[in-house]
Amino acid sequence: MKYFLIIVIGLIISGCSTKSTDESEIRKTIENYLECTKKEDFECLYSLTHPRSFESFTKQQVITDVQQGMHNENYDIIVKSSFLDSISTVIPFNENKYAMVKTKSNIIWVSKQASNPNETLVQMCSVFSDMYGKQNIKCNTVKNQIDIRSNETSYLIYEAKDKKWYVLSGSIEKNVVRLIPRTIKQNLQKLHKPSIE
Image (cartoon, rainbow, N blue to C red; front, side, top):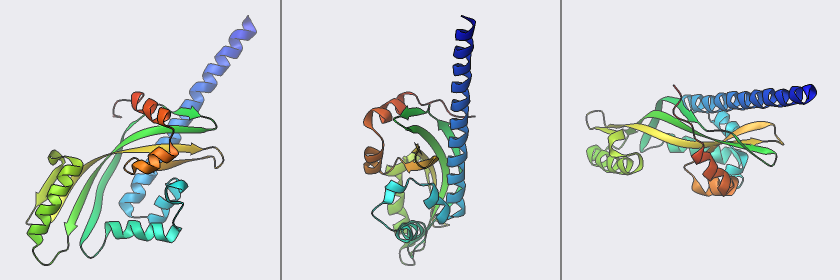
């Protein structure tokens, strides 16, 4: 009986240790991802993003696409701040593991349109209001910019073969469907924890 209790206690301690390690690694990965986004370190973002998100493209194509999505002849996007808001329980499946995180960011969209800048700004304000909610958008016609408060969902996937956690954006549904089993996604939503203080 004594040995049985020792084994049970050992398993409990081991389970708690694994859980703590997983959460620590998830926090480290997503915070690194957010910092790389803010610094516009696209090489870093590429290394942290799940590789199957862009398996049809070369590394340079992906990096160029992200760069042009943030800075081009029409506008600039500047991430002022980002932080991890909450994290779900980790769910193991086969050899891999899955988690869901919520993040918040303060973003500035700056128009570079020389002709009819206010008209462009009004149009984009409408677009962003639909995307993020009117209460999270502030249009500034004097500075020709839009302040955005963004609430995003991302998934963390631990690939056993790589021994590494990767980030998967929740905004690209086809990738979520492709890379996360439906029941796992549903359970992650149910097990999601309150906001981290």
